[in-house]
Picture (cartoon, rainbow, N blue to C red):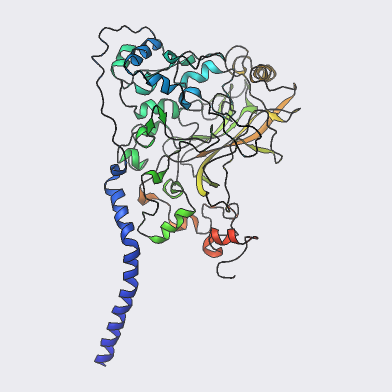
Length: 494
């Protein structure tokens, strides 16, 4: 009996060793990588450049305008102006690139694209260019080769007092000398002044960017909160070209940044989680919700604008803009995404199914480059030409614009003259969608999605819409589905 017990214990010990050793062997490197990422997150991050105190450098200057400050900056930073002239933050338009489905190269950006928020800047320059990194853009004749029209302060002011207004000009009363003496590496306030308030106000556009990120806690954004990252720590900059890309205005994937620029792609202790990185973007699990503190706009109905009888509320209805829907703690929607997106261009026909995607993400279950990404999808109803069946870009602000006259026909005629897109004289309102990849508001790892978040009844993934026959736990991996033409083979049945 004693020998039997002894043999049983020996057998159990051998089984434990046989199981434990492979687990230890195949995960030990991952554990070390994980510890490096958690314990010393700055190890993969280039250090910020040393600050040069400018407060004593302008003793003999008097600044009466923004361009005078720029001239003083360029006197020392001789190459900065030429560098800036070639950036997207200055041009608001890309170099021409070939796009699938187009016969000619496409040059697109904020300067000439259409969206489903304020629709477009053409004809609305004076209002929209308050966020341009320049001075005096008020019409189509703005000189993009004039270096002294570059606004250095909007990115480098550290006084917290610098503000811009229409045409990108400093607001009256701004102390330009105080701002010039304070210049340093851009802060969250510099970047957020435009990017947190895109679309007409705080938290409106992106979903994962708003003023709560000025001073976030760990739970809101672990990079900015716990580790005190600034925007420029991830959005590394060279020759004034800021790293990063947005499919709201871009049609290629150049100059992009990614989590794996700093994090190892297989850093998890659990190999089952590491297996997901071939299919899921990091953001899918690590950004469970956006608009955490402040609600973001998810729907905009331009067709309801102009009603004198309706009570106004900034989050529900404005006469000049129509009605809105806002959501807080928004759960993202999930789509395949390979890093680039389609782009609706002015003059393109509307989609036949009734809803036109302005920047539909490229990729599907059979695309090896694609991952399942989290998106905020902004849906809108906006004006279109019922005769030519394409979207129209109206003039909204300024002389004759809709916000003053409340006359859609006039606003659309003015927009047609400026954009060169013919207007038949007949208009209606069409449904559109815009897709915003979510990459900020990264939660601590303890708040990341768990297995049941997706692999359970009522989970957040719509597996069939993603191209699976059902939950992959039951039906098999993407590789299994991709390898089967019908996409209906259960794991282990072939």
